[in-house]
Each structure stands twice: as structure tokens, then as C-alpha cells.
Length: 326
Ligand SMILES: CC(C)(COP(=O)(O)OP(=O)(O)OC[C@H]1O[C@@H](n2cnc3c(N)ncnc32)[C@H](O)[C@@H]1OP(=O)(O)O)[C@@H](O)C(=O)NCCC(=O)NCCS
Image 1: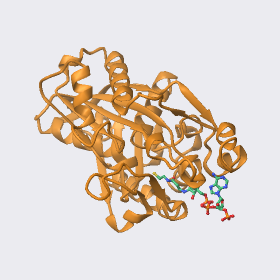
Image 2: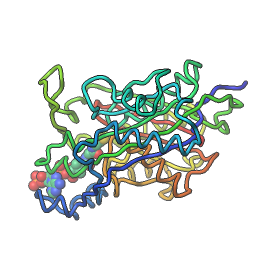
Image 3: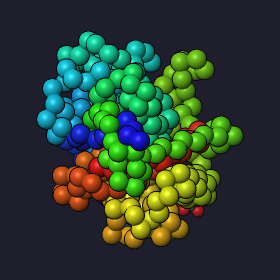
Image 4: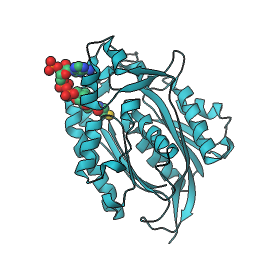
């Protein structure tokens, strides 16, 4: 029986011009290139310019995704933007993107699941498309984490960067076979608020009326990450009957190379199938997966028909996976 699937028509990304290397950070705080590379795999990150907002990055990524898809913005009727660093407390950054693209039909809203934001946004858009509520969606992950970092906390400020990525999804009828259908085949989302204090921002409109800074118990996050990531990927395999051998590309959230390597190893995913950008981008939270997708599309790795496995884990904790046939 045929099935409506959300098929990826294009993807795009944008990184701010300014690159900050580990050596540049080491000139300002008590850290070293060696420590950062060894513990995280990060070598450099992009940092937004003064006056460059999350919406500005998101608009450029969305335009690149539309160009890649060969589509006019007017054909988009849904925008879901994942961010933890919105331009304003409200309205949603998504409406600034919608307006900049000249769209005033359909719906646009933000979604907050920190580093898992893109997977949550993809699953949300997928559900709207499969019910027939919308036809074409822009799913965006965009962040300016540099604005919520405590630049005197060497345990966190070396880890993050700014950037944005986007994909265009279209509701299309497919034959209804998880193993061969194009589009999003399955998504699995989880959260557990017991871990809230391990990774959070110590401010907000209702609590302190300040923006606040990111706080993290790095070791605690590390301890839970691999188990949560692999569990939710096993859920995806069990739901579809697919396994690691059937995956062409593993595009994980780019937080830390050690977490990515350990997850791939535990799942028996071959290292050459893993798309890694954390060395050049740092952790860009909700933007990291679409940024990595964009890199692997542009350099010719991900091709039409490839099975792509996405996963993310972040503050909350939240975590999730998605299987997408390109
Ligand atoms: C953050 C992380 C790299 C820290 O590595 P770690 O091995 O756990 O290090 P610890 O925090 O235990 O600190 C070990 C030592 O390094 C020091 N240190 C911390 N940051 C440092 C830095 N940037 N440069 C140099 N030394 C640093 C600590 O002060 C500590 O020193 P001490 O032993 O003298 O007290 C690691 O915990 C991690 O990757 N966690 C997951 C974070 C993550 O991915 N979060 C995002 C999820 S979406």
C-alpha cells in the first residue's frame, strides 16, 4: 500500500565568516589546542559577527536549501526552526525567516530541544506532511551559541560554535516499503527532565529576566550520551528491520568526536560511513546535523537513494534518531 513520505528535496547551510581557532582561544583563556583536540576533536569554530543574529544565519541556510531544491520560497507552506538562541524571547525566529523569504501563507514556528532540536523539528515537520496538513516544509537548525557562553568558563566555551543548516521536505507518495521508500522512514524522540541540571542556561524570561549562560556538567553528559544515542538508534532499526550494514551514512549531532566514535563503534557502523564536521564547526547545537548533511551533499558523499541515519542528544536531556532515504 502506498504511503505519504517526507522526501528531502534539498539542503543548504551557512556559517559566519569569522573563524576562531583553538590557538586563538588559548591566547585568551587557560586552555590549549592539544587539550581541546584530544578531548573533543574540535580544532576551530565559526562565530557570528556583531549584529548578526540567528535569523540572519537561518535565512541564508534556508535560501541555500531552496536553491539546492530548485524551488521558489512561495511553494513552502511550513517552517519549523529549531533553536535555543532565538533573536527575541518572542516572536519565533521562524517568522523572521518566513518574512525575509517573502512568505505570508502557511505556518512558521520555533521548536526548542537544544542539541536534539533538528531531529525533533524534522520529526514534527514529517508528521505534519504525512497527515496532509502541509505540502512542503523548510526544517531549519540555527544557533548563535556564542551569545550564551560564559567566555571565562574553559569547560564549556571551547566546545560551541555558530551556524545554520536547512532541508526542504515535500510530501510524496511512495510505495510503502521501509527498505526502499525515499524520504523519512522513521523518527524516534525521547526526553527525560531528571537530567535538566546537567546542561542548562542559568537565565530566562520567567526566572531571572536575563538571557543567562550555558552551564554543563561535562562528565555527566558524556556518561549518558553514548547509551542514549545508541538506544534510540536501535529503536529505529527495530521499527524498520534495517541494521548498521544497510546504512550508507551516519550523520550524528556534532558535539564531541569521542562520543561519535564510541556510538558508531557500539552500533558496528564503519568509520568511513561517519560524517564528521565537529573539527571545523564545533558544537553548533540544533544546526550541527543540517550543517553536516550539507557538507556531505556538497562533496558528493550523500547521493539520491542513500540511507542516512541521523541522531542527536542534548539538554533536557532530549535525544532522538531519524532514518532518511535521500
Ligand atoms: C567537556 C569535556 C570535553 C571535558 O572533558 P573531561 O575529560 O570530562 O574533563 P573534566 O571536565 O573532568 O576536566 C578535567 C580537567 O581538565 C580541565 N579542563 C576543563 N576544560 C579545559 C579546557 N578547555 N582546557 C584545559 N583544561 C580544561 C578541568 O579543569 C579539569 O582539571 P583538574 O583535573 O585540574 O580539575 C567532556 O566532559 C565532554 O565532552 N562532555 C560532553 C560534553 C558535550 O558533548 N556536551 C554537549 C552535549 S549536546
